[in-house]
Image 1 (tube, rainbow, N blue to C red):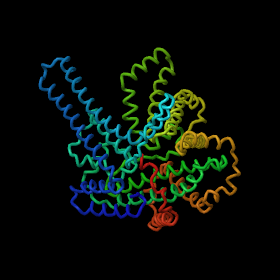
Image 2: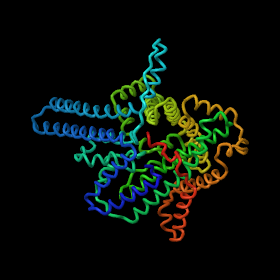
Image 3: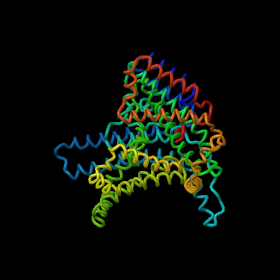
Image 4: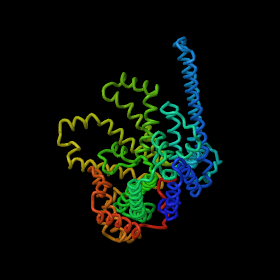
Length: 531
């Protein structure tokens, strides 16, 4: 059941009705039942996997919590008589027990994710290596379908168990309520990846119907439909024609196809987020934002702070901090400070960590060398940025006219950032590494701008009518994003307008979506829903 389908509209309508009709204390049960129905309708065979993740993480949390309690009880029972050595011994013992429990949960659930997501990739690598050792046998490929939203609910669940392990909050004691946290249907498709302390209590709190919040939720849903159906799925018509058959097109045509792919992915992903957040707001639940106008970023680091923010937050909290606070990193950092010294001695260990983080971001996106290269490319840009931090600070201090607060400099740095992001999209838009390199080579070796003014749009089946609609819709998206970047709250902006203007705006978006949306196409599947 796609977010942008009529059955989904009927489904959420029924959920809203049931949610606000039953007593407030039981409303979370409606959400739990609706979430499991939604998941079953989309992927009934994978229900066992989400139940397995829910149960293993839930009971592991209780075990870890019990070790925390037992440690405190044991130490407190000995009172002032306990020696420092005994205290340390008890803490080490229970710390080891907690670590064993959390490692079990991590290995099991990351193992399931890795097996389903990467078994084909590893099989391909092994089958490519075996002939080099004169082994004729081949490992059979497993025809596995990646369950809906498995990366998102796995990361969200394991973020919870790490927080419990770190003692940030106690373990959840209600299995059904925890199951709702894992499976909440608006975010199960493609996130956002929420923290337990941010979302769980909202799901189970009794919410009164609030007309203002409900109206805002509907506005978000409409805006998400517009971005997905009018922009993303229309752009897909051209990208799906050009990119798989790039050898039939000239450089500027391939580059334009990748540019539209970049726009498509953003409109698709952020549109899905708007729908998820809008449905949640109608229920009185505030999901975290996942995008902050990434194409207005002034650097690659800034771009990744704005793009898929909850994944970036997860990587920072549970991977980057885990590495930088580890004993191994402390030793590495000390070695570089002693043996290299100076600015490089301080910055090189950070570069290693960022390389690991973005390599992980790359393989999170999928199994294949193109995803690894996507991660390596972005980590390389981040590392270059880190190495240039001192130089850039010197330039900003001594040449104030180069400060990014200046409109011209900000525009140029934003355009440069978008260009670097575009290069990275050649990898994610391709069918593999050779395909990506072929597209990059063809784009920049024979760059003929006049080709776009020929029969390009008719040959692709895109046509000038689709181009006109996409141009107008894209301009509208840019204007809204630009206003938000300048600090304008669009919701409040329209709330202050007279009722005629407000309804004209709503009517315009509704009619544009109805008249110019792409319906019934395979593109209506969200890009990230099988991640």
